[in-house]
Amino acid sequence: MIRPNRSPSRAIHLAALLGCLLRATPAGAQAEMASAARAFYRQAVQAYQKQDFASARDLMAQAQTAWPSQSAYVLGLATMWARTGDSKETARWLNYYADLGLGQDLSQNEAFAAVRAKPAVRRAIARVAANRHPIAKSSVAARLTEPDFFPEGIASDDSTHDLYVASVRHRKIARVRPSGQSADFVTEGQDGLCAVLGVRVDATRRLLWATTAGIPQMAGYTAADSGRGGLFAFDLATGELRHRLWLPAVASGHILGDLLVTPSGDVYATDSQDPAVYLVRAGADSVEQFLTHPQFRSLQGLVLAPNGGALILADYSHGLFRVDLASKAVQWLGFPAGVTVLGLDGLARDGQSLVAIQNGVAPARVVRLRLDADAGRVVALEVLDRHLPVADQPTIGTLSGRDFYYVANSQWEQYQDDGRLRDGAGLEAPVILRLRVR
Image (cartoon, rainbow, N blue to C red; front, side, top):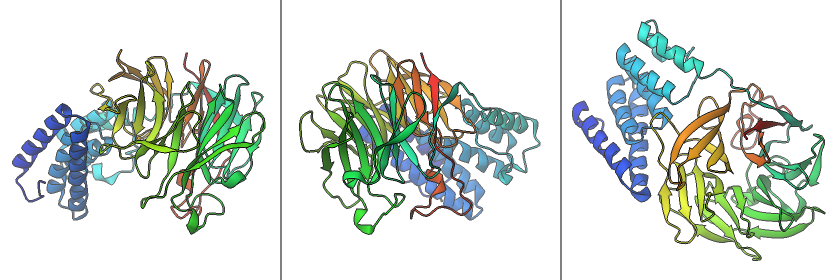
């Protein structure tokens, strides 16, 4: 590892070498490069806190070179150059950030005070601000009634056009009729449910699958619930339990998030706490670990690739992966310059494209990611919805016909890690948005 006291020129040269290796190596080696980037970033933050801005700038340059699409490193580099008074480099990195389509609010950021009036910086900041302008192509499909519902996952049943919405707080699942009326489908804590995170419909077998996790944000949480994770299935006609499958305990605990039901009835689910993909084979009464990998860090949404022979996984920290179902080979999906695929949460597939919630960037947005013929690379990104006042914390979506329905206002940021409401938190009833994508 490059220590902070190395000369800037040598440090930047070695960081460039790391960047070349990152782009040339397979997924396993990329994990090492990403780890190196995070180490540089941590050192940069430490130097910044000591007001050693020159060292912080050089360390941040190493982090950004090793992981170029990480927006925190790009904006961090702009900030470091501003602190050292270089308006040309500040503008360069702000424009790089704007090219990614991102728009963190910089209006009150004192780090840019010394260079803000420079014409190039002023123009770059204006470009960043323009990326905060809402793009509103969606409309309200439904509003639930409970302000503290704490929604997360959503699923659609194309045969009835009902929507199912998971409640983290109340450990239940609501059904939303096409009219917009909602009622409990699975009641609070039914059959031992913990917080419900993901839901998906098995249309053929008429089941609703759900992932559940023992986390402090759920009502009635106790220490004994900590780290529990499981998959439940309920009969779509009656709401009765059909499967209850708990994962084996692990030291880190589980947080099963999103899931996928294949046409054959296999169920795959992602674990973001102990990063792995789990599998319930069609007809089985047990859950198995399907795959883990050194590159997995914070797994989120998943879909079948267009050919049906692979999974496409979203990883909050590392982007997108393609996993061959037969060989379990893991491939990192590349993407064009000027695009970031970090911070992706929920995924849905629409033909040769992915429709995704990207809430790990500022501002949060819904995007279409067009894939190449082999689904091994993202070839283009299109912003479909962005920075809607009602959609301050979007999470997961589902495709139904020509429309993409998504949870607009989850409540993660309203709660502390211990499950208590933050001071001044304001809870609003959940909103489901409808976005025409075809």
